[in-house]
Amino acid sequence: MKKTLVVFAHPYLEHSNSNVELINFYVRHQHFTLRDLYEEYPDFHIAAFRERKKLKNYDRFIFQFPIIWFGMPPLLRLWIDEVFDRNWLNEGEENPLENKEVYIVVTTGGKERSFSKEGTYQYTIDELISGLIVSLKVFKANIKDIVIVYEANKLSKKEIILQKQKFAKLLDQ
Image 1 (cartoon, rainbow, N blue to C red):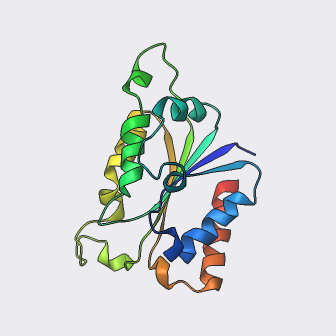
Image 2: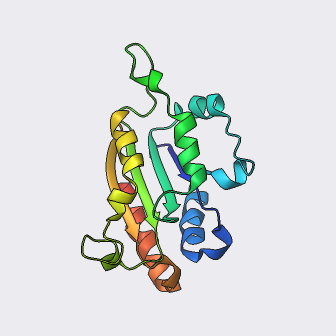
């Protein structure tokens, strides 16, 4: 099993049953390390050097977060800005993301049709999180899948369990 780091950012976790259930999945499996950025950095002072050092220990990464005002949560954006290092692109430097599997898990309260060119917001989720996608591609990460959970705040317990099972199956491939 691949050693996996989950970079999780949700500023209002107490209001998100779907995210709580999904992170419980990670906590129950020994090959997953959950890093809750809002727990670890409530003051937004990120220890970038320490974070970079930790990234080297993992084979796979999962970035999980809700869409907040049509983008990533601010602490996740800051974490990426401070932790991702342009020096990784220099010859001879170790790039901890290069060729590593990455999954992106996004939750939103909105309907799928709202996040389309013809929908209410006229932007897709991929467009709204394009900063993360481009950053990962620049660092040569292997983005395996982007999982989007629409209407996450309205899912029944059974629907949440089905989402977890679907995601677990995806990770086992």
